[in-house]
Length: 75
Image: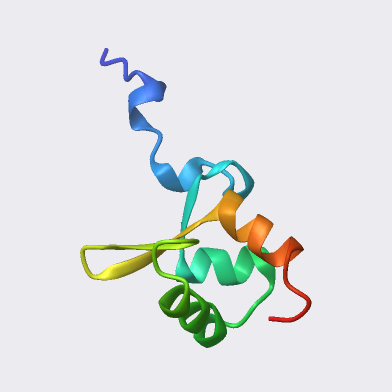
């Protein structure tokens, strides 16, 4: 009988979006209820502040984006 350790089998996708530190454009758009095009534009305009470019994709730093939204009167 082969036993598998479930802690090694869990992928990053099993983690709820609210617990992730960095989100992809699609995840962030879904989490914050903002369109993907608008989210990409915000990421491009705020690169280094709320977003980073990793390989060939933007990643949104969730806590910094939450602060960005709180300090913005409009998006």
